[in-house]
Amino acid sequence: MQEIKYIIVGLGNPGRKHVYTRHNAGFLALDYSSQRYDFKINNLKFRAYCGRYNDALFIKPQTYMNNSGESVAAAARFYKIAPENILAISDDISLPVGKIRIKARGSDGGQKGLRSMINILGTDEFPRIKIGVGEKPHPDFELSRWVLSNFTKPEQKIIFDVLADAHDCVDMFIHGLTLDKLQNKYN
Image 1: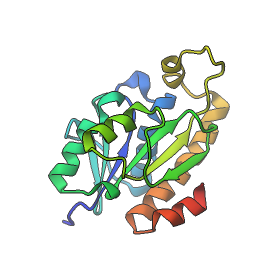
Image 2: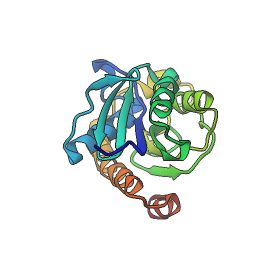
Image 3: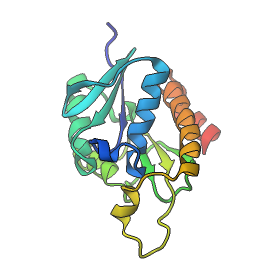
Image 4: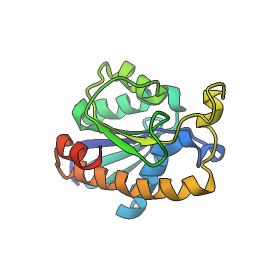
């Protein structure tokens, strides 16, 4: 069996009530990839559901969003994975629904799962795919209520299409395409 060279982490919250929420865009992306690659993400390890495709470990932390870094760091230590080989997929409220942005590094942008990863890994030097889930409908709308809301019917079609793009990014990443080429294609 090949050694693990990459970790692909989808950020989200565990539990049935969160499955199709905006905050679970990362989990949805991993579910999409697992279907395309035909493997399961169902092995519980590192306080995350894990699945393996070739030399990539796909993980869905079960710690809730704010503590996602705990699972990622445990897997990275175990497999000795450098931050530049950890690809995080998260929701982003500053992007319109269905827009993706690829970043090589950077701040958490207010996303608490990314914040947890940065704090626990001790670096922001890991690539990420941000999936746009849209802004709050009104400035006074409570942020947690917004990110824990489900996508509308019209948004579901848009999100499904962008999950295919996110999968293509994951595929290119684990097959060695450089981040600048990914950014040129998708940003």
